[in-house]
Length: 314
Image 1 (cartoon, rainbow, N blue to C red):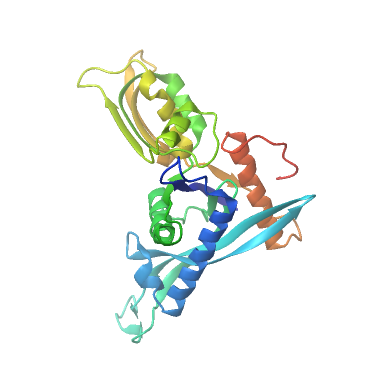
Image 2: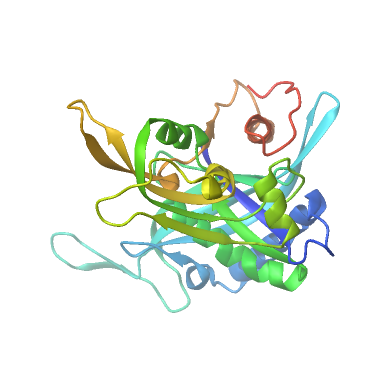
């Protein structure tokens, strides 16, 4: 199973008056999420509330539940849930004769090409990993939009002192590679937020202290010129983009002929993922628990969570 990772944050509206959200609030958020989805299913509004995608397909949330995975002397609480992608099929006809084979009756939601995507949410890192299912998962922005659409009303209702942010976790190694090999930059666009929780990063500390929930920066050179390097004034924001936002960079790189080519980096095109396979005879919840440990291990490794010695996440 391969999971794409998203960072879901409840950020204090006023950092001077309100503390960090903490694990319990994230668990409560997904309890409300499950209750909301349950009402939607009972009212038969899955299609009406779904996120429309291209080609008449839709993306909707299904139920989720809390589980606990015990590892040696440690317990890991996590959320297991699913999203569903489908095509609405009000009428099905024969390809050759065009005769109607099926027509949905009033009150029915007939769908085709149903695919379910399991997700795991770790309330400690507040990272959500959702199954890619061999490329069938909608694109990064569609999933982000779905998470925002479902969770935002719940945050406003039940957590009025917080605001919701959702961003894809992208691979920082690709960004570092671009910064190292680029010989110039023509445009840099950044959209980031601060971190929910303690951090040693001065940029994120300053954003949190000033309740700066979203910062968008565009740095560009006019026609025929370029920035020889990333300006120091925005370098810290650029380096935090893979974990706490997104970045788009148009840059120059050396080619084999001694000249330069214009290239583009998009953080959304470089998602961070984790993968694992179930062990022989392993029950699903134990496997999911191990995947949650891998999510935490990744969060520790890239500095999102304080570094600890991992016991067994393989």
